[in-house]
Image (tube, rainbow, N blue to C red; front, side, top):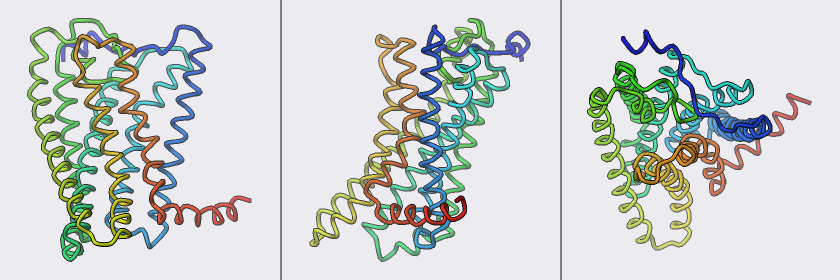
Length: 311
């Protein structure tokens, strides 16, 4: 490939010019990353170790935690390393790997959130058929479909993006290798190859979005018809965390990729990228644990065991 013979590395966006601000950014990102590791790690441990949580809802929550860990680990450690060592460089291969894994995790997470909406729809609107529609085999197949679809989308975008000749340098105006910013480096007439891949992804994303909206319309209609206020509260307590996570994920992604070019700037692009790539993985465990008493109880039961093992 012609672009690979001339470009061996990319230069990522610098967070600050002064060393003091760079170290402040490092400390902030380290705190966010550790919070994401702790929160998602606790969810993984709680779901894996407690038999009461071996249900479809928590199985998909476990998948969400894994995907969140993968997503934030793809971008933030490299950004922190660059800040700490006062460099902007990322190798060509490292940039391609970052694009692949980021698109893989972010796409699989979106499909997993769509499946979680289906799980809540069946649980509330078709409870008598829940065991047959969302059994263990069906859960495994749906999870495999989400991860597999994410892999295919990531492969498609990575292969297309890094086959383009680059004519405008190697400076990426973002803190990680993000496809829109790499496309800005491509030759004026060559980026159209990626357009078809983007249109295909938009078609899939819009289909998932419509499915989620229709599912929640049916869920809210079913919940509001429940005669028991306690039943309504229980149904909302299992749906609202998922709805909050979906809203955070979709809104930050829309603002990042569909904002008008007239308001685009490197600093604004950086803020929106942080909002959709870093904030959700750190905040999702908190959102899910706020209203979920079963998850809270499972996490609390883990602490005596941890204390005994680590005096």
